[in-house]
Length: 266
Image 1 (tube, rainbow, N blue to C red):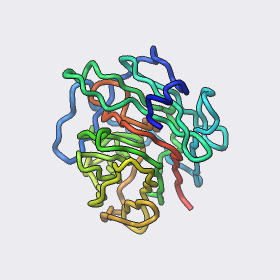
Image 2: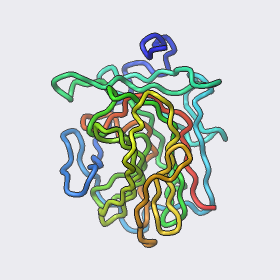
Image 3: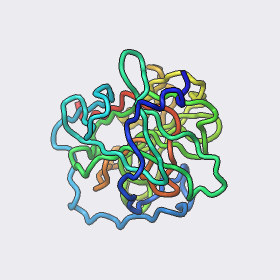
Image 4: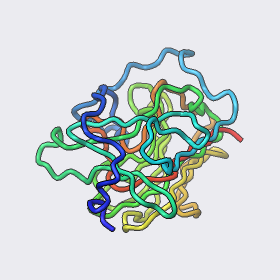
């Protein structure tokens, strides 16, 4: 069944909260921010906390259209944000529901494109620091959904001394990749040579452990990169699903997302 045929299952309508300017996360070092975003000011040392105990959260989106959207434990709220009529929809996935994002925009001016994401609130308990980290989601995409940037899940940015962890499906080849950036701005990315934009569901997992960042696709490790143990991820940014924000240049995701999860520590 096509997404258009399921459009009646509305999760989020137009007229959403205006976006705030934030930073772009370039896919590789040295790429300048796009219009619509600016790098945030670096956070003063010690002003941002890190998770003091193990954290585990998961979003299945099976609770329907209730707002706010919470994880399975009833916390860590997500809220819809959008621009230009961008809307999210609930669609069937297995015995539950998944979130469908706006179709890939084909307008001449990107500034006019519909955009929509899910965004949490500041929560320093979701900052892993240097601890063991796992995060990911299930995704369904086609080649028509691909673009130069499609962010699935992230917290923070790779510019402005902010730090981040991120999962994305970037480029026209449909490669998933896991990304970690410390406050120095150096980007560590594990990108396997595998196409997940084949119209089928894929489970994508990012694991930081044993001085490595590993990308796992459907339970199989596919790529890894070494990450120094001193690289710390701690920022005041919220958790975001489907883009780095709703403003222009947000690396908007197109396709469907389900089973978003984050685990920090043992």
